[in-house]
Every structure is written in C-alpha cells, then in structure tokens.
Figure: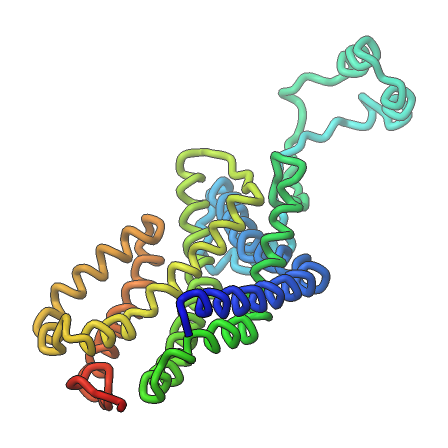
Length: 329
C-alpha cells in the first residue's frame, strides 16, 4: 500500500471508531449520566457528614472517638444531623397568638414591636437541638451542571464503546505487524487493562475517602467554610483515579525498558532502595499532603516495582522484542 492508501485506511478506521464513540455517548447520556453524577457525589457527602459530626462533638467538649458517644456519632453521620443552640422564649411573655398575628404581614415596625416584648437575654434558657443539614454541590454557572452531565456521558460512552473502538484501531495497526509482534499485544494488553482497573478501583473506593477527610479537616483547622463546587469536585474525582491507574502501569514500563535493552534487570535489582525513594517522592507529589493517601499509593507501587522485577527476570522473551534480531522472512 502507498502512503496515501495507508492514510485512507487510517481515516476509515478513525471514522468508524468515532461513530462508535458517538453511539456510546448517546447511550451514556440517556441511561447512565444522571446516575454517575449522583454516584460520585456520595464519597463527598459521607466525608462531609463524618466531618460535621466530629466537629460538633468536639465543640461539645467530647472526643469523637470516645466509646461513650459512638452511637450518637453514628446517628449524626447516618442522618446528616448538626446540633445548634437555641433559646426558648417563655410562653407567658410571647404567646403563639401574637406571633401568628404579626409574622404573616410583619414589616420593620411590627418586628420591632414584637422583639420589644422579648425578655432579658440573660433570663433565656439555652436548649440544644439537632437539625438536618442538606449537603450538596454548588454551581456558579448556569451551564455547569449540563457540561458535567455531558462529560459523565462521554466517559461512560467511551468505556462502553471501547471494545469496538479498539477493534477498529487495532485492525489498522495489526495489518502492519508480524504474528509474533501481535502476540505481545494479546499478552500485555489484558495485563495493562487489569492494572489500570486496579489502580482506579483503589483510588475511588479506598483512597478518595481519606483524601476528602484530610482536606475537610485541614479546612476546619483554618476555620474555612466548605462549599464544594460541582465542576472542581468532578474533575478531582476523575483525575485522582486516573493518576492511580496510570501509575499502576509501572511493571509494564519496566518490562518494556528491559526488553528494548535500555535498563537491564540487574539495574532494577541493585537500585531498589533508590527506586523506593523515588516512588515515595512521586507519591508525595501526585497526592494531597496527607500521609494516608501518600502511603496508599506508595505501598502498591513498591509492590508493583518488585512485580516488574519478577516479570523482567522470569517472563520468557520469545522471538522479536527483547531477543536477538529476528527475520520473519
């Protein structure tokens, strides 16, 4: 095939892949986008409810982790309750009839008259009560929720259509590969997908909760009110698992570098202490500044580093990649 014919085949493959992506986008928007946007908000709501409960108990002079308040803490978290201090007005001073007559048409003058009947503040008795605190994400732009909805649908659509998208792209690439070269893709691709999925699952179902808890506590220490914004939070939720998924490709990167002869396996083995230090620094840089999320990324990466060493040392090289030059003819 000429260069122009190759470009024409590439255009057809990309066109078919885009058609499947568009179909996946339609399915994602109308069947999954709403649920996805609601689902990714749950970790934030849980973290905020837990933070509010611990903060309120601390304001009452009680340690949140004390066994004596374990049931109360659970009640606050499960129902999203917050305590507030109110002062009861004695019924003989201001009757409910007076309130009903004034409040519906109350203006500044009427309110002043009503408040003038209030007793001395020093004589009021405080009462503690619980109220439900509605937790949700805010939006500062009219189009922001719509764009997030489209983004969620696009992500779901790309995942649903990924087999057919990969099929059309792979059909173009595979035409230029020998059989022994295709075999590496069939082996490494499922391995890569499995590692990426493991990294995403670890970030979303385990690390995200600790990251949010740390950030909320940090804001609480600075006495900064937290009003999460929809677009920022969704982007954060998407980027953190994506970073973990990419980082989990470490064994395959090591295997590739070893197979092309750039870094021998002996160098990986002799430099394991330096590698752990580099992993610790990277984990510190790509995660928030809390020790929990750093360790949550560092420990799996250290394990994956040694898994990469095992793959480099014991995985058969075969013909082609990583062996002496091979002439398929």
